[in-house]
Length: 267
Image 1 (tube, rainbow, N blue to C red):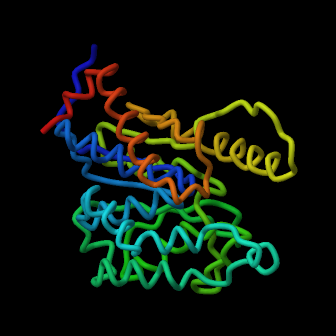
Image 2 (image 1 turned 90 degrees about the vertical axis):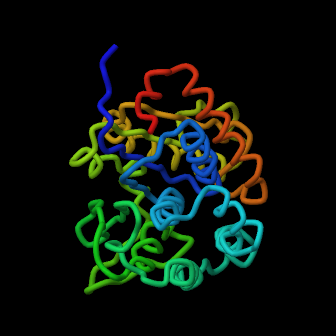
């Protein structure tokens, strides 16, 4: 068994809509075992959780934000409704406003942990990592700008959308400074049992795309935790945030028991 040096720990959080709320439970379990990541990266919902954690919000505080209808109002915006099916949602103003309210300095450099947000540049058809500047709220919104749900965000005549479109597991920037990387993928591969409706086919097609574009990032992880909330819930199960949180916590706790070598990261 190789010795793990106590150096910088990276944590990568995948996208996954409501399933990404499992990240909060995973972070709590890691902290309960004395593991505190130094750098965080994320796409989509993983980017939102990563941003709050990098700013100093604890898992308990994040859950409270949901209960207080702060973070939860964002999840409500992201829930499908009959009106959505006709027109879609136009802007990400609510998310930008919330990030600015919770993190007034709005700066990557003033965060407590180094943060890397993955976005997709539609002009170049490639994913990019944003990690500096004073427009934190804009880039969080861009990383979570699901195509078809939210309009693309424009910056310097470049259009940006959800990072999960091309890289749902953006581990790459963590490999530069971190000796150990912990990944959390809430969209592990799941074989479809029955595709009875067109929407079922669409969901599994999107998941297949996300799983494929996550392979490189997954392979860069030293430890990979896969909460199985996807077996009971879906990307828009925001009302089940408590259950999804507990699935994340249980998955991480079980992983630590099965991989005791991770405890060498404990501080």
